[in-house]
Amino acid sequence: MPHTSITQLLGSRWIERFESAMIVVGVVGPFATLPQIIKLYFTHTQHAGGQSLVTWSLYSILSLLWCLYGLVESKPAIYLGNGLSLVMNLLMMAGILHHAGMTF
Image 1 (cartoon, rainbow, N blue to C red):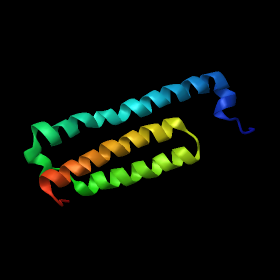
Image 2 (image 1 turned 90 degrees about the horizontal axis):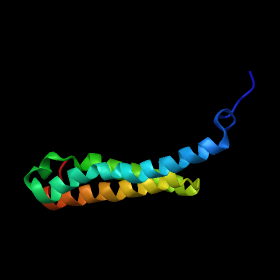
Image 3 (image 1 turned 30 degrees about the vertical axis):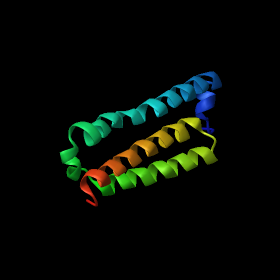
C-alpha cells in the first residue's frame, strides 16, 4: 500500500481549519494554570511549600524547548501555546520561591 499523507486523506482545507483551531487551543490551554497561580499568590500562599519547584522548573524548561521548536518550524500552534505555558510556569516558580524559598 503506498504512503498516504494526512493531508491527502483529509484535504488541505480541513488541515488549515484544524491548524487554526489548534492555535486557539494553544493560547487557551495555558490559562488552565491560572487557578493555581491565583492560589499561590493570593488565596493560599501558606501552601506554597506544597508545590514542587523542581516540577515547575522542568515544565518551564520543556515549554522553552517546545517554544523554540515551534519557532524553528514556524508553527504558531506550538510556539504560542508553549510561550504562554512558559510564562505561566515561570510565574509559578517565582511564587514558590517568594513564598516558600528553595523547595523540592
